[in-house]
Length: 383
Image 1 (cartoon, rainbow, N blue to C red):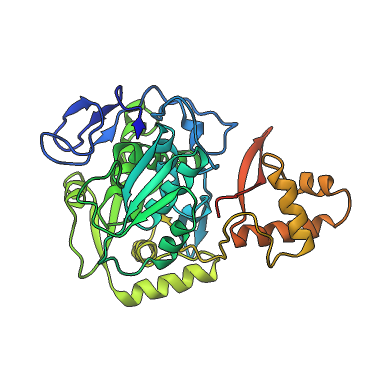
Image 2: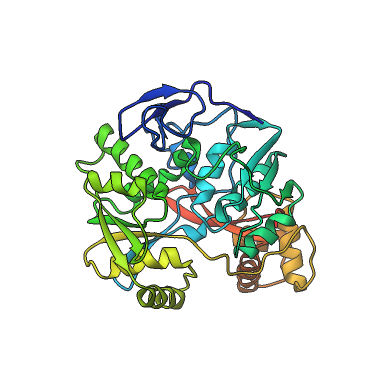
């Protein structure tokens, strides 16, 4: 694998180490490293993706994108929800995959199986012809949906063995966190001042990346203070090393039990958000806090994914719409309707596009047209 990281400036938020190169952990204290911005923040408001912040993101000689980022914020049950299920593979991991693969010059990336992360990385690698070798531990339980989807991708090779640490990238790599921190930039743009951010504990990488994004915004003078961070964890879970550091700089830990998680999943599903238990855990914690806390949620992948460009099970109108999209760049529903030449109503085209999005054959996104944000659609041939 060829990764452009020679000029990558890295920082340890815990001990203050600053260095250059391709390191994942601080050589001085072992804490996860974050990237230093490559410049000052200038927002390209014409770009409705993480690359509106391209002035600070560390990329190689190209930009790889599927329109990830700039996801909407909506209020559900009194809680502000940052809906990361709107990303191409349904996860905030797409932000990190876009930045990391933009730094890969070719060859093959070796990675351990980590559900959403590995799937996202493989999809983005496939866009530029980069192979992905996935090591799956024989002891791996569950996550069969992600594993099967990986198995059906032409650029993926699966080996059933422990990686033994012989990988090129893992969730927590500085370039992955570089993309994930754009969530903080977007919250500043979309919401402004908030009471705080509620995030699942897990290993703490999501919270660390978003904290770094807000720290940079404060350093640049865009905000006066970093929002309060609340880390939600299962009542029987432990506080991670990253979580302990975040607590040392002001974060709060809230325990959540199983009943609250299930109720949160149901409440979110009724609002059209199908999230994993770990996202529901954060929503449950935020619901108990009051005030304008923002919760970041990731989707479950509950929709019908298909592989390749087969049209089995599609209506004739869905087939026609998909063929139009596969032969062009992003298009609005009106543009698709015009291209079809009057064979269907505009309402029928909207309905067909919605069905194709749910099937995983088309992704919807937004572009800036003048002063308006307009929904556009593009075909995804990866699934």
